[in-house]
Length: 386
Image (cartoon, rainbow, N blue to C red; front, side, top):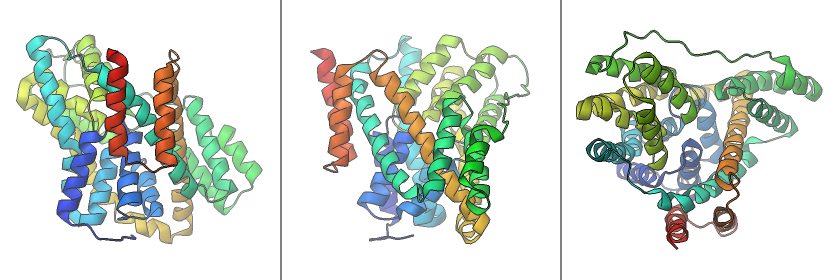
């Protein structure tokens, strides 16, 4: 790790509280914020080390951005840093989501806060683009890695599951970087691996209208232990079991819960707080939140010490390089999808202008992302109310 000033636990706590409060836009945006704060502004970590963490995080179950916060906290502050970084990143989203859940139960509707998020979503696109550009410059070290990244982009655009595409990129890339030619690898990435998407299965305890706290906790512990991919994968998982199998929620309640998870800062998995509150009140919110996030702390604690050892092995280092570039490819595809839905469905000239201005301010003038996020929210609010 390369640092200019080594942080203490107070610095770690304040930084991840800040990111947890302003971290709108999903995992890619959260990772972009962490990269800007930890690598660019504070120089607590090199971009190469940060990329290694991104690649490693994408290989284990759980919320990627939360695990990135936990990884960074562990490197900067060992076990206390791990706990503080993870809890402080999660806590703001949990508190805000819990408040919205109380309002939802009390009044039956969600507060009308969409105008604030109009400009904010456009700024988030610029933040992600900035991170993809900077991380890509470090990850794409040669032409072979560029080919691997493009191959993973192709797999993702064809509809492959994120974790499968990432593993294919890592395994094929490892072989290519050590053994194979460009032509052979291109063929393998795009057509040589006949990977099929495997549907998730589960064994539910029973079909219940109101579960016990133990049943609710076990369900979210399972989700936190096996969930790969983005928040959209979480939606499918919850819809298949909570709504269709267990009948703990209605379809509308689930959609409202997911909407709150998208509207609030921090990890999308704070949706569990909302769902837990709707089902079993404050105890349900607490048990659902703890159980969905707890596995990530143990996964990171087990994996983090292995990352430097991976760099010492020729094969493991090649695998990590390939996974890093694959992770950047995954972020790029997320950016494309978000940009399409935010700016072009339908065409929104106001959002396009906000996104372009924010991109220029970030790439050219290095404006702090905190001010961009606040400014984007205010501009979007003014556009919507005028």
